[in-house]
Length: 320
Image (cartoon, rainbow, N blue to C red):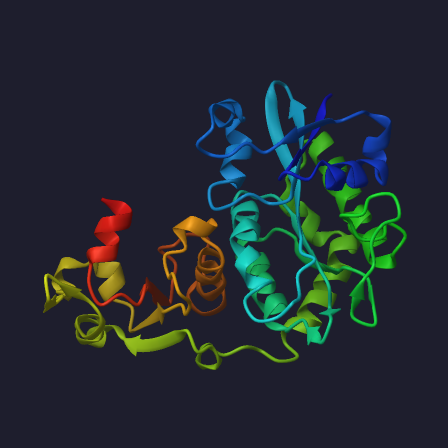
């Protein structure tokens, strides 16, 4: 039985995880996650590609069972300041993992410098976890006085001796055990280890439940008014774009409200910057304020992206 740790250009993190778990005794493969346009990507197993359909997490752990590569755990590490959109821009990586039925962990500091982590990260992950019925947990990256602490052996990782990381390793071992026994990973939700963390997640999530109107980049409008809103911000060949609701699917028109996300910044497309942070923010807003079921059809509100361009010229430049 062969285990593999897939890493996102950071083998130090993979070695840190392996050396602090039972993988230290089985010599796992360590593979860099190739870029989607590379020849190497075509050789990545489909089960791993499924987790990469939105973005690449920092770590994917998998095991080969009867010739199939089965992912059983993913982790995302953020040593950035937990301000504003920084944590939420990683959200698409967590979504992809959960939607493919793979438990995930998000490790980030509760504080760095003068910035503290907002509770909306917990709320979004609880919504994702409840909808997809798979563990989605936040763990603290240890800090002291706003300065992040790092592992003495692996400088890109949190201290392995920290109590939060011990809980992370406990989750990893449980996921590994279930994968080895070919038990559904969704059944982890009922284990004592998961239940304890779920209580922690819920406590933080509902201390201050976020509302859509607290975000300056979000607008909620009546779906019937969407044509007038779009014509006011979008032009083609100098004329306002005339959206006809009759041309849209019934399930879209049938929703009373539509959430419009209009990012701020010099380049709303962000194609030259890997899609960050706006791809992650779309997923964040979807699960917080739109989604109620596992598929994109199961939304109580529509989700619309407004790139803040007054014409389609930039679309033609980027997408033609």
